[in-house]
Image 1 (spheres, rainbow, N blue to C red):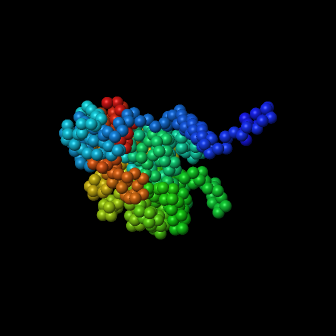
Image 2 (image 1 turned 180 degrees about the vertical axis):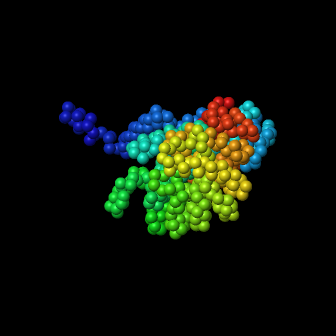
Image 3 (image 1 turned 45 degrees about the vertical axis):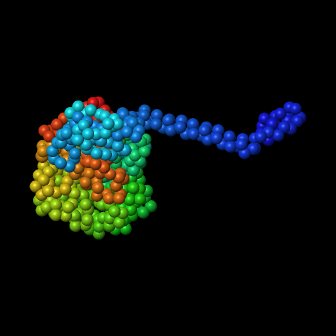
Length: 482
């Protein structure tokens, strides 16, 4: 008996049986409850999206493709990310998030939506092969001391500006980027595609050991330090620990594994010439990654460290600016990839006061020029990356433009498009996106930029995002000022 029936009985003394319990009434109530729940859910989702919008993280799709109709880019010049020349007399047909065809000008389907590029050059979306999505837009103090929620929110905001700089894909080589990647892929925030490594795996005293010396000695009962607890780094000593930490990152969804095989310029303890991880430890990480069909990349600068990496199956050397010529030849002979960053003594260089760091920075700056030369001379597979850390992300485009000092502009652009896409492909079945990246070719994912600038003559236009007139990722347009 419902409350209304009971009240009627109390008032009249007569019992009229209602239809509250009938199947029809119960079904109607379920529909009403479901509708209320749906409205509450939508309201909650709107509140969450509103929160992100207020923080600058809401997805920003400028122009949606008409459902069921392809999109045709016309009146353009084309750099396809593979051939070091500019093509003319070709259009670009986009459908279902991919490059459907490259028809001759005027030969595209009549029913396609059209975008007139005004004779500008179209290039593939840029790829940064050495990025730290959760560490690029914050200071070191914030990264290592603040509530991790703030760090992730700032990373989400930075992801949006990364895409607006034309970088539609990044290979994240250290940091808790799994959640950010999921948010970008689900459309919660705007950002580039992310190939995540998860926590960089470091030995005790290695480049990824961020503890203070007063935390030593570490005892079995000690809790994890901040960086380890939040997935920035994973400390591992000995084969069993290296296997465990590597497998943990794979379990989280790593598309490749990052280890630290040598010291760094800014490392508080380990000298830049230090060689890290024994051969057995290094091989353990490589074997665990290989069992999952992917590979290991390694932070390392010196010839000794690079040679140990190559001998034990590491597929990508990160930095390597202190390599001698024999070591570069060894990379070429083994087909090892080299991710080189333009670490130069210029306006974008990190500022240090510690004499040890300043000396290391000077060595690396000198080695950078030599690294570009040796990579070209010995035909090493190499790709562009920035390794921008701690609130220096706005220099990302300028960093790529610097490569034109050492090679032709189109060759430099290739290192952040077709070459970088080939490096990403080493992830095999662990690659989180199905399709070629860094190229404009039939079947490739439709990541495109329409630019004000001539990539054949210089890349200075990369320093000003106003020169990026259209930004497309996966067939969706996130910026259009044509």
